Length: 361
Ligand code: OGA
Ligand code: NI
Image (cartoon, rainbow, N blue to C red; front, side, top):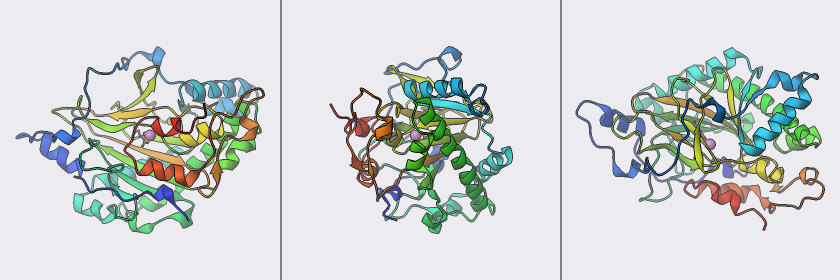
């Protein structure tokens, strides 16, 4: 595979889980300046308990039911246009498949550092255990470690980076990625329907292509939780992202809307789904790739897993003719998706900067 989704070389930085242990213990070391990136008073965050400002909830069962499908498709389209984010309930991915994934992702991060290092990133790849998007010696760093793997199709896997412990890790990721992708492709059909296009049009761009899974470990930060960021503001470069959060009592993900940050209260058993750059482009802007970030809790860790669905990397990517509405114009340039990903992975995360550069005046 000609594979920009594997990423580029990144500079080695400290293991944040280990650093957090030193900073959080009794005789605390100060948090290194490179992690202090956020001015807590600079941006408005909407109160987490204000449910009138929550991201929309979409019911997959209603999408399937002929009685309610049309109405729910319209709600789905509106969520993807106005928020770029929604929570999906009644999604049909078996509880057991999700529970196994969660158990094994948590199990991986709970191992001693030496064991996790067996999956460490290497110079030729962004897969593996470590950090992403570290491109210069002096940039600010995120308060998190991650394990990134290309998980499907099976022949695209690089087993150097796949944990052997927990012993069931590989099977759990395999089942989960297959089940969750089936759901994602089904959602793409409903999204196309929602804007009056052929259900096969969007699905066809992504089905069977590369899927990456990024498991994120956000340690607590007792001294300066309001000044560190777990994940810098960014958009996802892929099509659809399905996110699972392991501990629902810890709020971390925030979504940008109208210049404010909206905390996402993950519902138990639901997926948080979001639109990425590739989907904004192929939908000619009907669906928006919205900036999001992850914040840190002072005393509790948070673990999440994001499944990214990429389009064919060997193809040119531009608005699909059937998604350019009558009377509208083509709003995005057409680009080699491989070049797009290369640009994404060799820069620091920077909000909507990259996708904006593909917009036509
Ligand atoms: C991501 C992401 C959010 C989270 O991995 O791209 O946005 O809550 N994660 O971990
Ligand atoms: Ni993201």
